[in-house]
Length: 420
Ligand SMILES: C=C(O[C@H]1C=CC=C(C(=O)O)[C@@H]1O)C(=O)O
Image 1 (spheres, helix red, strand yellow):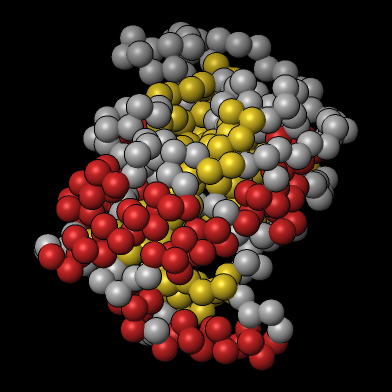
Image 2 (cartoon, protein in one colour):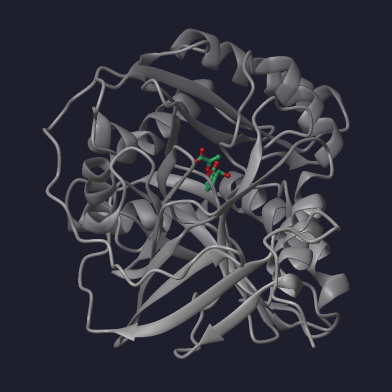
């Protein structure tokens, strides 16, 4: 006779039980969230809200994503799952956020919520997750009213406008002199949120303002990213590469002219090519038929245009979404080319640790499928309300410091609108 499962196996793996059941249509996910510790993954009204925390797995160091992949595989293998809905995001899931730099002091984390409320297409569901030795509960959280409105001043942090222009100029010089083609340099804004601020207010602003982006909240990292690092679903892999940016025009004809200027820009096309090559090179060993859309297309966001390329293929080696995030990170859209030299220059010219900015953020399911974005257009909020936001731009040989500074200002807009 098999003995009842205990919560922790001798191997140190926590044994979880996950049960997914259909729900009547849930139109709004954000009101269900915890106001100070929201877990969210949302695009075009579809996604998942996580409530509570049944398991947290923390990682640091150069192999943080590989460690997370292995720990998650073990956790999923030990879990019992009863999934009556069977769509991406049902069954066992973890939300995750990873530090950008191998040497970052920021922890990389997978969080398994106690409850997931999800919505995809016409289907809504609830997943309850518990440790195997804990009793099952049937209560469903209720949406709650939002806390008071707030506005905070977001001010230049460790790298202000002048410092950023100088850093870009230094990078351009280095690119002209050395064996470096592209480096992505970021600057920071800082602010402080009043005690008890309801982060759901910022999430509503982001989700309504940027519906085509991934609006996310994981362990205080809050934002709306347009860039899909990798998505794995039933043996297929997809990615959306962005690099090359121009601001939206003030009327329809200026806007069309801006998009045309972006397509015609040799500088932006070059910057974009580096990013596509880095993603193709990282994914090719995992997919025999990997293909990229022919020419970059223009992706319209409320604040700017990006050059974009979609990549898709069948997986040939059973990699999980975390395995592929590990293979891809950091792409040339957030680091540069060649990667090692670009990372060294970032460490030299940026006077801060990027934390989770520009790292993978997303979710993974018990079968390893999942969706990961690059954490852009985001801010990290600490439990005592300190907020740091970063935005960067790809620097190549003919970059102009003033224009790159203006580009970072545009990229801060989602966070300025949500918090400022
Ligand atoms: C580094 C950022 O954006 C990247 C993604 C899209 C376009 C980019 C660019 O044109 O420079 C950047 O590579 C950021 O938003 O902080």
